[in-house]
Amino acid sequence: MHSPTISIRRLIPSLLLAVAACTGLSLGDNTPGQDTFMELGAIAVDHVTDTSFVLRKGPDATGDGVIKSLWAVPHKGTPKPIATLDGQGDVRVLFPHSGVLVMAESNGKEQLTLLDRTTFKVMASAVHDARYAGTRMSPSRRWIAVADNKHKSIPLLLIDTTTLKTRALPSNADWLEAMWARSSDTLLVMASWRDNQNKDKWQAGWKKTRLMAWRMDTLEKFAFQTAGDGFWANQLMDVVLPGYGADLFFSFSWVGVAPDDSYVVFPLLKISENKEETPMHQLAVVDLLAGKMGTVRFVDNAKGPVGFTSDGSSIISYRDVDRDKDGKNDGQDLLAMDINTLKIEQLTVPFSGLINFFITGDGHFVVVAGWNGSAKLSLFDLDADTGSTLAGPNLDLHEVVPRVKGKELWICDDGLHRLRVEKGTLDTIKLPFVAWHANLLPTADEIVTGDRDGETLVFVSPVSGKIVRTVHLPL
Image 1 (cartoon, helix red, strand yellow):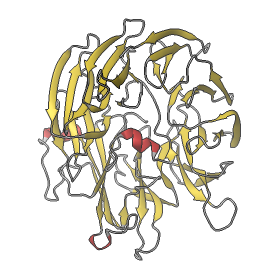
Image 2: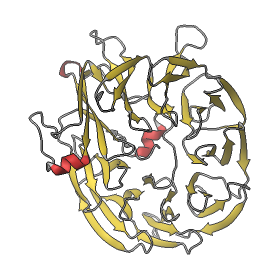
Image 3: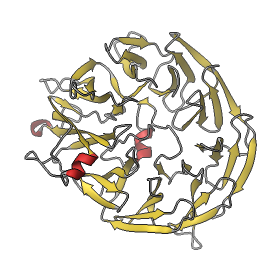
Image 4: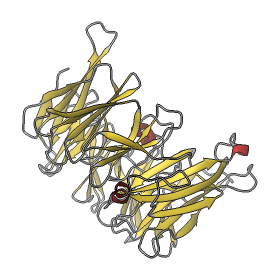
């Protein structure tokens, strides 16, 4: 995931499912401080205190129910259960500026509990008539953007972490995607409307898309005033694109923001006037710089989610290709495009099938995996214009922990693996169990990983690859 960006996907009950259903840019970027869906065993890490959080669950005494306890494991401190969550689902842990926020759903209502980040005492709580999905934090860590899957319209909500109160984005759109800018609390929104005469056409049944942006300080200054069109007033940007819609399939409209907030990329479908024709995948590259705000350029036959190289000079996308020249697409290639000219360099991926890719946080390297680990990893050096296949097991990129500005990637896929990017070497770390999840303690500089059930956590030195301590967490 690319904190602090946010994606709200309707019809998807959890962000994890969105990750699992996506080709293109891997959304499995595990970093400390990010919002974490806990139900399937993920390890959350507080970026301020190096505390790890794990959800332990198992059958109750009767065997008919499930008991759940959220554990906090301070770095070199004593592990302790900090919340009992029996009967609650969709458990998430988030790290706003004010503490540790636990979110869980019960009987169609969302329970929010704000904890002190060192003592874990309850500082505030709230119950919302909602069922949240796809949370992401703003750069200031004050605001959380979230979809409410309980209601038919699935509104986009903003949670103010200082009060735990919500505000709904006023909208009658049929689909909403949202992202935070990277350096300011600026909300970037893509709203799409269905064509009433062609609603039965899944991909082609779109009428228009509107791209908008608001600064949160401006919205607060004017008390979230609405305009005549029903949306909030005082927009920073407003672009209407007739004949465009959201992509809802494996490639989808997860919005990409440049590292310096200079550009935002909206992956879209361009709808043909003949609704029976397959829509074209396009990228709308929108300028966010002063004086050019809202200027749009398009890239044909390119899919999302997209990413950027660390210096923001290139957009990384991909497209379908016909490997065996039989008229049917059976593979996908990378696209590296210059942000200024949008000139495309197409990089041939050395295997067929669907792909995921991960862009390193330093240098111009892209790691490519086959869908669900169907091929050996490929490593592309964009500066040297070279590509290679890495020796080692077939891996997916659904859990990747970057370290040392991304020069080192720790990949969790039926084990823990270390990729030294500049050397192009991949090795497997020996553990007493099969690692299912991983994260990073940023201050201690340790990799934390765990087994499938969260019963055992081990902390690994990323320098030596050796276990430095083991923690067992009972039910």
